[in-house]
Image 1 (tube, rainbow, N blue to C red):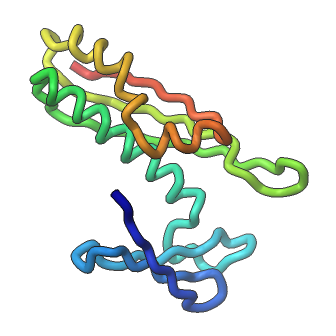
Image 2 (cartoon, one colour):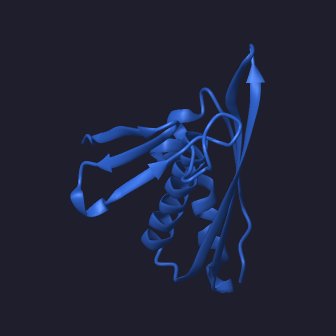
Image 3 (cartoon, rainbow, N blue to C red):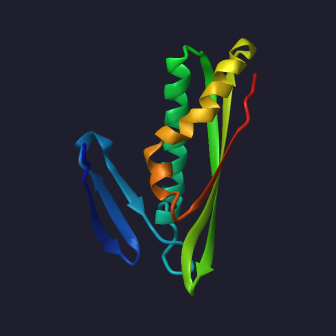
Length: 141
């Protein structure tokens, strides 16, 4: 499996992102105001956090579906930390929180998923060597 993304510089720190599938459309990215423009789109750090959160949510859904758990809703958020490391700005941490809403009788199945779902998230497991990723699951019944 592979994918391809094409990026075109627009102006200042704005970039147009084109994905390898036309139906995915385009995405405009920009840097934060301290070095970029008006923040017309997400910056790469936000996209990194989004990718980790999205991947973890998909892994949770996959596990719950395999266990035949009805998912009423699933919400999530990610808080990223950017700090100077050896004089350069780096994403040093991502705190991810998932909020699945399921039926109370499925709590045991959810607990089984909580033990394993992170292992199947391609993005999170790929970045963990360099970024501290903390994940919490707070179920709503």
